[in-house]
Image (cartoon, rainbow, N blue to C red; front, side, top):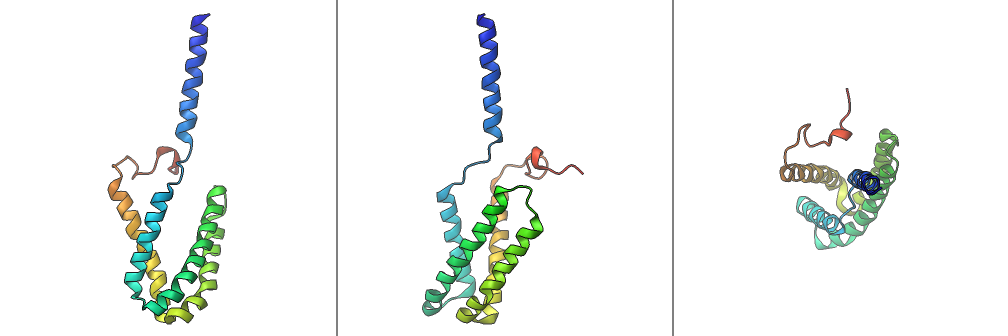
Length: 148
């Protein structure tokens, strides 16, 4: 009887360990805040905003980022969601805010803003790759790699 109880408890504990490993990591609010502040500094440096421009630009930027985050969160909730649909929603959001950004910083620097946003993502991804230990498959967990 003791052996049976021991065996059952061992099986249950091993199943809980497996379930806990499959759970996606919880977002770290401090890390998100740090990334946001790095992004703001990066964009500020790229755009060289005057104090008057900054006063008008950052509220529009915050609204824009809130909508972009919402699109990404909705996509993460549904892993089977159409990627092209998400990209179209992001493009529509960029077009929606294009006029507001242009009104504050002009056409040329509005284009620089969207380039800087893209550059920041690339720099961030490179930093993350540098900090991660090398794994087979280029850092992609085995269960997430596509089977071609």
